[in-house]
Length: 311
Image (cartoon, rainbow, N blue to C red; front, side, top):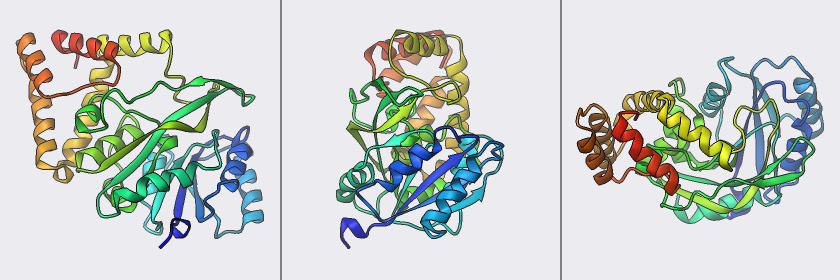
């Protein structure tokens, strides 16, 4: 089988996305890798989203564009339940937001990077994004997340990229689809944790291939600059990050049988050290466990959070 023969299921969760949806659909049509099918799960849109989708479906055909109804529980649940559809079958799967714009080589490059990783072992491609405004003007780049290699010790602390850049193989999808109803903070962080936790491979692309639109309605915004860094630091120190970690850990424990023994031990170690009364013992165990974030400044903030019992 050649790269051109590989079938990609593009998975898009929509909700009142009419303003920017045609631009993303057009960027899918412009992909240099042509063997794809778009699966859309709409979460109850009340604007023209469904009309737009049906118009493209009429032009492309129902085999090219499938439209279904979402669970109505937010974008994470929409993506995860869509990924678990029993009638969904492909070689690779790509999550897509409704308001981005993909560069034409996006799918082709992801398949090129995933190919050498094989199909038996879970594998996930992800990467940097280009920020654009409402008018499509480029306004910056997402921060690089390449200070440390992708892995479970890093995934326990953060997600290195957005779901809108992620492409994953069938082995990874099988893990994600096994328990689609788990409550998680974000589906991209969950994918990064689960794939690395079960011994899978992650390829982080330094080349940005997704133009990520920043506007008042999108749920995750710009991640670079002093203000976003301050927000992340404040989230660590005020306990909000601790609550996020607890939610993710609860999901990981429910999926613990999927983790490798080594990564299950990492999860146990981090779970136990969070309960330790001595702050310096907590910090020692945290450091020895190799748990890390991708920014040196944020790593220092995490060490402080460990000392203060905020993790």
